[in-house]
Amino acid sequence: MITDILIIGGGGAAARCAIECKGKNVIMAVKGLFGKSGCTVMAEGGYNAVINPKDNFQKHYKDTLKGGGYINNPKLVEILVKNAPKELKNLERFGALFDRNQDGTIAQRPFGGQSFNRTCYSGDRTGHELMAGLMEYITKLGNVRILEDLMALKLIVKNNRCYGALFLNLINGDIFPIYATSTVLATGGAGQIYPITSNPTQKVGDGFAMAYNEGVELIDMEMVQFHPTGMANSGILVTEAVRGEGGILYNKNKERFMINYDRERMELSTRDVVARAIYNEIKMGRGINGGVYLDVSHLERDVIEERLETTFKQFLDVGIDIRREPMVVAPTAHHYMGGIRIDEKCQCNIEGLFACGEVTGGIHGANRLGGNALADTQVFGAIAGRSAMEFAEVNKINIGEVKEYTNGIIRDIRGDIEDKMYRDDKNNNYNKNNKNYSYNIFKLINNFKGIMWDNVSIIRNEKGLKNALLEINRLKKDLKYIKLNGIIQIQKYFEFKNMLTVAEIIIKCALERKESRGAHYRSDYPKMREELKGNLLVCGDRIEFIEL
Ligand SMILES: Cc1cc2nc3c(=O)[nH]c(=O)nc-3n(C[C@H](O)[C@H](O)[C@H](O)COP(=O)(O)OP(=O)(O)OC[C@H]3O[C@@H](n4cnc5c(N)ncnc54)[C@H](O)[C@@H]3O)c2cc1C
Image 1 (tube, rainbow, N blue to C red):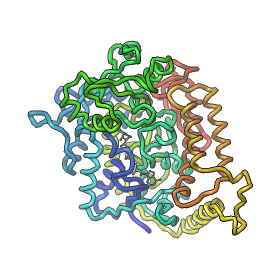
Image 2 (image 1 turned 180 degrees about the vertical axis):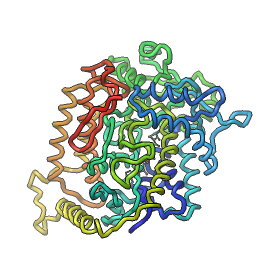
Image 3 (image 1 turned 120 degrees about the horizontal axis):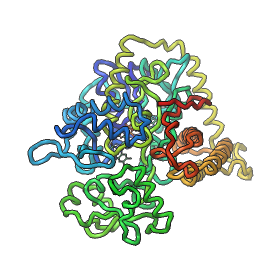
Image 4 (image 1 turned 30 degrees about the vertical axis):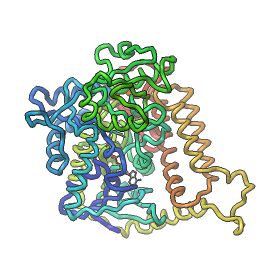
């Protein structure tokens, strides 16, 4: 298959990117279903945009930098805040409608770390509305071919030029290339490398790993956001809108503990602060059933039933009526601030390769403000689309240059799968008594996630990080002896390889950043250090500090 523009991913950033590629042949290849996989469709609380005359770009810019621990790329932040209102209008043009005030203006709610009530929303299912609008619009365009249940395994890169990607068909197991003049990575983050996460199953960090494997520069990979409020023990998100609408956090002694962590902003402090506060309350024995209380019972019933409808129903499903009783919440792995290093045109350091959305780094610095990620998908999705189109206007690929190379990789991948497939004893290919064959991919993944949670989550230190690195090396060895049975296990095998790669990068960067900033908290270096105000760049074996 060959196309002008290949977009890998089917969330908000990919969809916005596709819309921009007018007049070009576009293939959008998605692991899972378009618009149903990924985080965008799950997004609840809202989209940040300066649309009120009392607000201004400068305020949004400052809030974003402050929230990000001042290591955001200022140029990208400026682009985000200036273009978020325009893209909000575009969303309404595509068919996604936002809630209104009595006077017909778009309603906005407060979100953590913001100096103005800037978050536009559609109840607490903003992402669903957004995706519905984008999908509806795209299906009418005619130039975008959507291919579902395809997992990108590897980018085709030769001589610093990207020629598309190799895919695994998740229905029939076929492995094949899609060649493209421009390739856009929009695969989102990697919440699933932790056992407790708000993210769906597809989010294992394929994009980070594929990029890293080809020498793409990544930045600030240690910056993983733990959302303060997931449903305790499961991690399913309890949107920040709950606190935005006035939800109050209590510990088991009924103390409103945020007063001890951020007296001024209380529950609407930034996510890193609230997540650590909750984590600490639980650690100090002031938690309840693995979490703390989040209470909205003092709010009007219609606020809960209408503006927090999803949360209301989500708890009703497990027998809790939040109009009368508190929720129990705990931190959950949520978002990646780090990722592929892009310039203002969403171009990375490989020619013909662009990136947008959560797979990129630099926009949110050390901590993302709630509501800024949806805006990011639209603003940078549109830019990536324009850049990919401009590139495809003036360049063409010659498949002949990479065909042999690609076929070689396909042979290697097929050989690897063949080698790993479970064989029946009758063919003498599988010996049940060989203990080396006893590894099970699901067990290895669960084991790995536990290691990440225990050592590389909300509070980190050198001992734990080094221990995690050792364990990961051990798991890499175990993976050699894995036996696979069926397409789901083959998918998990490739995903797990990527998860290990991503984890290793996160750990190495977390070890390197000897300070606490934003979401990255080191108990052995609890203070922010001015001289470390900068980005950690990773490329192959190189980790470099870039001062800001
Ligand atoms: C529960 C929840 C609520 C949230 N609420 C908000 C909110 O209210 N406001 C806000 O600003 N942000 C919110 N966020 C964050 C925000 O939704 C995400 O950061 C953003 O939507 C990411 O968009 P994306 O397009 O980059 O990635 P995603 O929407 O995650 O899409 C990634 C796509 O890539 C595909 N993919 C992955 N790997 C591969 C591969 N190997 N091959 C092919 N395809 C692949 C996936 O299947 C998916 O289609 C929330 C996140 C979650 C999880």
